[in-house]
Length: 88
Image (tube, rainbow, N blue to C red; front, side, top):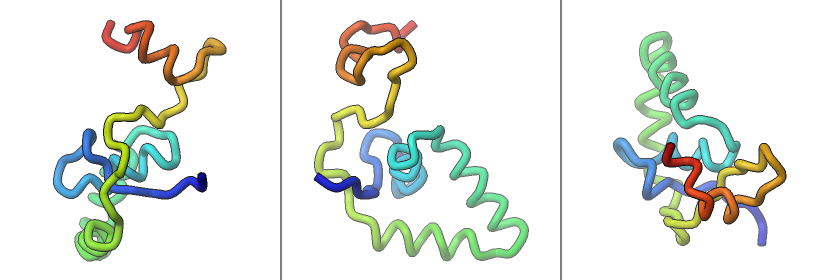
């Protein structure tokens, strides 16, 4: 299955665009949120870009599957989630 970018259903503030981009690129969605805010303040294009992304991107078909790579200690995503270390 090819990797596709979707709007996030679990990490959603407005449309879920930044959460989806964060899952796709495996980085913190706050980076994308700050990027859109900087675009709004600097050029005014951030609002239009966010709205276009919100309308064009589709919702995640598997919203509760963890797609981020937490493989810091040799564990897979499923092992990480099952170990409950992320709740500490």
